[in-house]
Length: 306
Image (cartoon, rainbow, N blue to C red):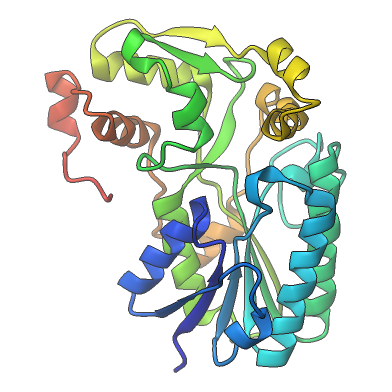
């Protein structure tokens, strides 16, 4: 059985962790180098994992369709199946829980770009080709300083506070990348046995900034305050700072309760248990060199999955 996979965007959040997970599972992992011929890179691979985004959040409207065209052309030429780590931007303000049949009503520029991208993959799947959308909420990874959780929310945790990017009580869905990429590896083993589209929602771990602050307080044994993110300052910066504009477009997601329906996922992975909020908090503190109070230390092993 062919166990070669081509990963696009291996330097990014999903791609880097996915490469590690596939290698650990015995797959041969090829890295795509941006700007080279993707069709040549895809020769002989079983899967193309498209985790590639425009560098530095630049020019999504032009680059995402271009990347999509390259992936679809390479998949047709090589016969490879395609897996895409999909997000929830396409749903806009549609009430959750979000499922594969939830209408796509994006309310942001990025959401509309992603919805058009997904439609092209759906058309590709309708031709009898295997396509997987592994759909998840915000990525978290205790190892990466560049996730929003590390870069913004937990930036000042040593000073006894976190930064809430929206309503502190809003419950949102998150995907630990070690968990999510294990799912990707499992899907790669079997999901191409039947052609067509698999749009699989990953329920992940759901919590609010308030619940995170409470869990941090319990593990650290001291009060953790919640500070609101300065969206007004970001608004002033967004005309000249692309990352600021990208964040501002997604502000609505931080103020609304949402979750991904796990029915289809649980049918495929009945024994899979995503990390709990307690575990996620512990791992993030551990990677920062911050000790938890003894009772929490007894409950959580220092043997992390990192």
